[in-house]
Length: 93
Image 1: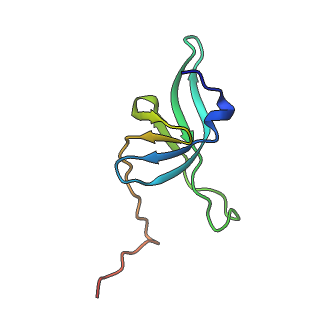
Image 2: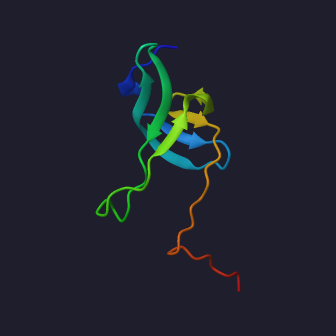
């Protein structure tokens, strides 16, 4: 399958583990002497409408890519949720 980078940037990345939409491909990590793709890099989510920058980028190794569709890329990678001191869980009662 032959694909250009501009076509790859239009595809949305979805995690198969939890069905979460991670975003669109922002960059690639390439191994230059061999010419192979090492990883996809998806830009992190915007913070407050983009005024306060972005969250951490997602680094997705090429081994985690499962399938390419017409408009999505399916990956299989477990991500750890980071619950910082500002994020408190609500009690059910």
